[in-house]
Length: 403
Image 1: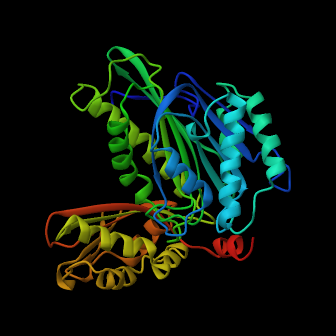
Image 2: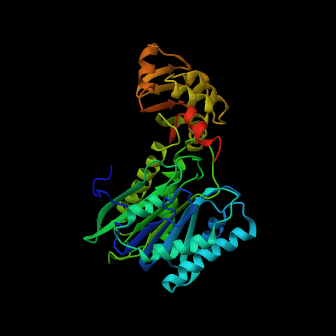
Image 3: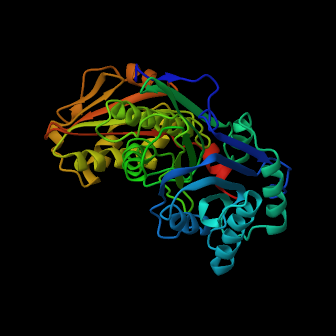
């Protein structure tokens, strides 16, 4: 835990100085729920972002990937209810029209805006409603409307996801806050999740980019719900410098604290996504230690986190470590069966690749808890890796058998 940075109660994407937001309904969602969100910086902001590694990328991802490289950014426009993915040249035209329209509202250039969409794939956006929604959101901008924006980006989420922290840099308050959405199609690298983080830190683009990439690797790229990577995944961080501190370079004495705090904010939002996973009843930390390398540890952890057989056994409260042993064997990691140890919340279940003397009833009790940790020691080296995952339930199937 970061002792020098403090959590802001009810903090979110507008907690940092110089940021406003809005969330409105424009008619994309049939039941009249909020479906357009706008996050705006009062000052041009440095921006860094990471995007889905899926080769099938949605139109808003393609547009934002181009814009984030070109200069400072004024804000992010997000719609839910339609992913604008697999929509061809028409979808690209729609995405460009969205940034052109929001740019006109604020008398800025289209390239100063980033774009996110989430929802059903293969459907064109209702552009008449979108334009009206942009105008409505621009009129309702407020530093107190972060909650509305967080609601507007939800799809199968059951609750909004917001978090913010504050630290001191050069004796001044610096805030990092954000919002995220995601519940299904969650797996590295990345997943059906969107995240916008804002900060009033004064930091240059190259340094921010490095911080964001490293923070994402230790947060959103270490969660899994169902093993699927989507077409629209985006994490955006905007830094407008409104705190008035000196430039946060690598040699700045508070730079390590800023970097840790950014990572902590992302990890908190990432955990919220997993805890709101579609139909889940268990949240499981899978930690692999003693691997021949960090890459081997990652292969082993991902195999366990993604295995449907393992995940369904957790749903039934069955420790079934034999399925974990099998997953380790096919993971691609270098393993020796007779060296493997497996622990459930610190209680040993497997020693030297065979059953321990721990009574099965004790292991079952642990696996029936809503949260537990599985630690796997391969005794092959110093490599380590951890990932946060879930069980897989009948409810997940019900949610996803049709849209």
